[in-house]
Amino acid sequence: MLMKKGAEASLFLENWHSRKVIMKKRLLKNYRLPNLDEQIRTYRTIHEPQLIHRAKKAGVPTPLLFMIDVKNSTIIMEFVEGKQVKQVLNHFEKEERLRLCRYIGELIGRLHNHGIIHGDLTTSNMILTPYDKVVFVDFGLGEYSTELEIRGVDLHLMKRAFQSTHFRYAKECFYAVMEGYEKVMGKETTKNVLEKIKEIEKRGRYIVERKKR
Amino acid sequence: MPKNTMYCLGIESTADDFSVGILSFDGKILANIISAYVPEEGGIHPREAARHHAQVAGEVLEQSFQKAGIKPKEITVVAFSQGPGLGPCLRTGATAARALASYLNVPLVGVNHCIAHIEIGKLTQNAKDPVTLYVSGGNTIVAAFEARRYRVFGETLDIAIGNCLDVFARKAGLRQKEGMPFGAMIEQLATQGKELISLPYVVKGMDLSYSGLLTAATQLLHKGKYRLEDLCYSLQEIAFSMLTEVTERALAHTEKPEVLLTGGVAANKRLQSMINSIAKEHSAKFSVVPKEYALDNGAMIAWTGILAFRYGLKTPIEKSFVRLKWRLEEVNVPWVEEA
Image (cartoon, rainbow over all chains, first blue to last red; front, side):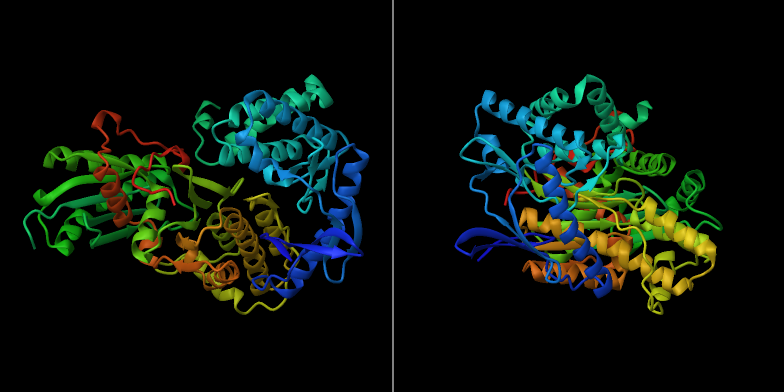
């Protein structure tokens, strides 16, 4: 059953050997040349499970992987029960919201600390389970890096996601994320990353702060 | 024509084009005269472009009144592009607008250039609530209306797509001609390309980066191992695939029913077919803004001026300074209805 038609892949909720699973299928994109399309899909199908596995080692909850079918660019993984953080964040009381954001920040810190970049940190890619765990999904755009620049871009995306989907609480949410991040990464790195984010924002087009440079 | 018809005159001068458009308040485009500055060599020199604008301003204004068949005193409001764009160019247009508004003793409305591109697209294509891909020499933006504002869902982290293509064309020794922009030359060369050369494909979430792609393509060009046709072909395929992927992500995320393609690069047939393909896949209506209204033009400024003016938005002369880095999220758009 098609559960979500994403831009990059389609998610099917299936019964697989009497397990409820997600089949993540990277479908052929007609707009891309066949060669380029296959290159991109194959790369992402192999790459994503590796990152998901590495994230587990870093102590970040991710779905269990059951099977990888490179030929059909399909990944079969655990269906995570719960709700997208995107759906619940705006409805939480302030305390609860900040606690969740700090926890998310801590998880991002663990990823970065282990050289993992998620690449698409939005609140729709985080699932809050009934047991209060936050499971990170969709590592399709992830990479390995410990570079400050790349970490900055990763977190900048998180900030942008708050601004577009949770604009009323964007500031406090991102602040809380960085608090959690600092718990893992320490003051020094966090300060550097925050400076980097500022720099990235200034690089953005048509930003008022750019004048101050 | 009934005596009480109201008209808005819009002045556009953010970059290399100086343009004047005249619209009636019910959305009829009566005139849209564009005068382009074509540099003899290299890219746009802001001061030279501004000089061009100052030189042609009077003539373009006159032509637009002639075309519209109305007299200056029939104008109800003057709109101008207040930003974002190149300082000297913006200032020239703003000066003309201020002078005209005070001479006619009518209100002035400062318009955001990027929003104007979306609004004229909506008007001419009869779109209501689209995801807009705005691609030009200065901008690469995926925007859509959400929560009371137009919001940027994806954009370039460094140079614009049009800029990337232009610079590559110049490095390849192509010469710009009137009516034949670099983008069109690359498109033509690309149709004779056969081999896909590997180049960096850089999508970060919903954002893109073109500087690395440009550097890599230029390096391969200087190596001289590849045919220019193949390089143009590969550059286009990869750059446009990135754009399409990002637009599709915005479309999947917002679930909007329409996709609007605009800006100078929108004229590219290959890009059109790629965006069309994802629109189909998400059952969204696809439209390309016709060239006249996709390039920088005065009509879009006039139309957005009308939309704002109807909601009582005006720009007093003392607050009409140009805003070089004006982001579209900052703009209050009371005329857009929540879907």
